[in-house]
Length: 203
Image 1 (cartoon, rainbow, N blue to C red):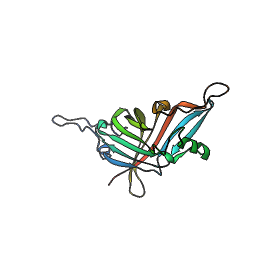
Image 2: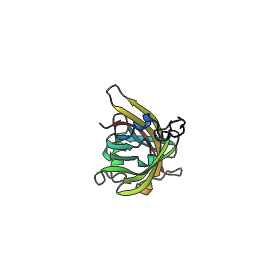
Image 3: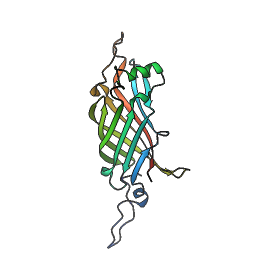
Image 4: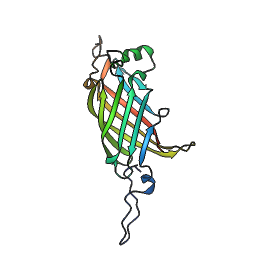
């Protein structure tokens, strides 16, 4: 039962056009602001070839513009403050902020600007756009699942999505690594991006 793709199942009678989109989905059309207290923008990296290190960013802003009748009109934009990286280890976070990785003094933000949105069927969607890290912009596609909509106890209309994407960090200039005595490298080139989004509809 997707936010963009579900059709009204009412059969048209002679001389009457069938409704293209059910009213409840049409009502979700609008602009939404990410709720940072209920949204996660995270990543997973392979460490020393044997385990995963998980992290995220605590400071970000974002906007979703949803079209309940045509997903191709939907857009997303996110700005992430790179200094807010948090992996649960202060030394590792400091290393990520310095010149080996994020160079946060020179490149304080990571940004995403969508260029295309697609309905894949059911509750599944794909949003493609431009991801900029370290001043390098490359395309990124994020597969998303629509988790539903609800009005919270404070009267906010919310929508929820969760999704993932994979990147090769070297394609954005994140090339630092260290060789292991047993072979392989300390940090994987492939990074999994994780999104758990709650967004509030603007008045």
